[in-house]
Image 1 (cartoon, rainbow, N blue to C red):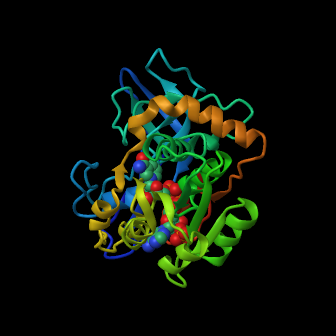
Image 2 (image 1 turned 90 degrees about the vertical axis):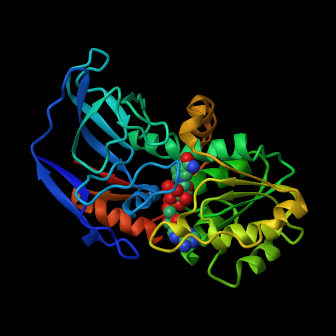
Length: 339
Ligand SMILES: NC(=O)c1ccc[n+]([C@@H]2O[C@H](COP(=O)([O-])OP(=O)(O)OC[C@H]3O[C@@H](n4cnc5c(N)ncnc54)[C@H](OP(=O)(O)O)[C@@H]3O)[C@@H](O)[C@H]2O)c1
């Protein structure tokens, strides 16, 4: 049998595990051109929460309906193939996570550019790194820093949700490029992790205020902001940015889990200070995967880039993993490991 995590009902406010349900079904059968993948690692990403609401923002993926299976990035092993390009035993990444088995075709649904099964050769590295610092999280960090913010060593950068999957790579990669980095996170433990293990100046966004914390760590302002959070964080960044500062809009997690998205009320500061703000989806920049892997992989191999994972075991834990990650109870890359 195959178990898939499905939406039981639309969450009213914050997601709870009872909003999701595991459904048993027969293992699906691949058709011509398709492969059957036995998933081994599921990537737990905050953005799936956007699709559990009644509507999704224009331009984004459509909402799921109650009864639909969740989707997300995953790694798995080809168990059966009806496609000559894939052999049984191949390790592939694809976008039909949150289930034990998936039938994936070359015309598979895409999540921001990641679609058909992509062969992964991890060599001696832990395969799940290709869902984290050497996969989507690494690419997102790299695109935001290099393409969107065009950082230089003279810059002072703020990264929000810096103890998370994307934020931790972004903060460390920028620091390794000589940028002065401040990171924010939501607990004293995470702040200690950023300071003591990642070597990044850090603050807890809960207190005192974002403006006071930023003023204390960057008294003359910041040049760039890597936004994972949106809302009050983006508002504070616009105030703290120096003239001609830049913002990379990577995500807005403060508005995903039931809270109404709070736009910044101070957008005119962009006019006043000549700021530049640009949103992006990493999947549109897949051509940067190779340079990202060279740079991030080199730092990981040399022990210069710290990577932490929060791992939940078994498809039974996938709902709890998603709820915990959205609540800030995980650090680094959140994953669900399937036996
Ligand atoms: N543009 C792209 O292509 C792309 C690709 C991947 C991810 N993203 C975005 O990147 C961001 C980070 O994703 P991730 O996978 O690395 O997740 P993550 O940072 O590992 O996990 C989400 C974190 O968000 C923080 N958070 C939750 N509610 C918050 C709030 N109200 N205020 C401040 N922080 C809050 C929590 O950390 P604390 O304990 O610190 O609160 C939580 O751990 C998300 O916005 C995601 O949508 C964008």
